[in-house]
Image 1: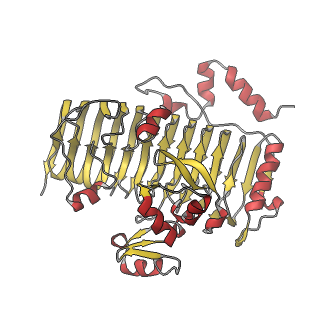
Image 2: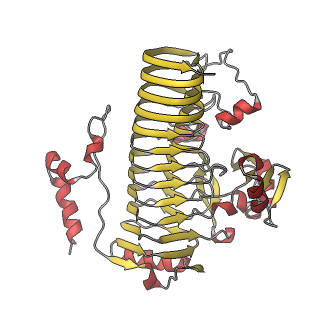
Length: 493
């Protein structure tokens, strides 16, 4: 027999569009979207409810609750779905595997704290930074799921301090002494610390953060600490809701939906320490239909980042990140407020960003790629953005991204070769048809920096109603059809 919620969902699916609009609390965000995008709503769950305590979990911050979470999810799955409630307390656990039709609900005062013990996280085949590889199992993981949610007023903490390397210049002297006293850690240099010898070994073999040359299972296990996972990994899931939760202290990226469809991220806080290496707030990769609203991102890397795979693997996947609305979000610190790339080889299109504020980020609006990526970024609409204290560029298009933040690149003195044209082929990235308007930035290092490829200029960019106060004026290289209307830049050295 169907539950009341299942009957309601069946009714919603057959209602006329006008009537459906009255029942969908997210309908207002789909109004006035400048591209064709279907409306979707949050997943609806059956009435079954359970409490994690029923399965032997103890919220004392010390008792390992991994088995209790497994039993609880299995129980609700067998009942056809429902809600698993986590009450106030500190619930110490290993990785959690989400299930279809289950809402993981954290009540106020609830903290899910993941174990820092690497042995709890088996190696799995996955994707990181746009490449197929092996990583440790994510603290929260969902694969091929339908109707999945994490909601409530609690906190999910990934114990990222146990996984991440540390750069001395990013912390105070007292923090450096405290964080590097782990006897398992090792110094690569006086100013760079790794959490294990295996991490140091893997770093010497890595292409960015993906190691090469590991042939046996023993080889992989020896560098497990290097294979730090994203905290929330959702792969090929449909109808996803993340609402109200604080996601913090992730081992690598914080929230990573990959090849998902119909995603709502609503009133969440994604935060990492400013020194967190690869500590992105949100990386939305090769996803279709996403609504990111009224959320806060305070990360050690990019805040809200749109991706679609890297180089040949991304092009082979061929799944763009498309139909995305970002509305009413705030980004503190980190490398970029709203970011596209640099892994965008599968393409990015149909993106609307509005009513956002960026406070103290390195860059406000950041578009990045490089030769070899390929992919097309197009049909992007950005409006009504406020920024203050932007360390480098309010707006940047950089087609010479080298794996460093803009600040790190400037400090290293690296200069891109933007003079000699190369042959155009499938590896040539393209950025075109991007509309930016109603932007106010009070305080930036440089107003704008557009650095395109001579063989493939940045093309058809509309800049309208923009007011920026900066130490340096805007600079444009290898650009075509940059349309400026009411663009006011005040240079204050």
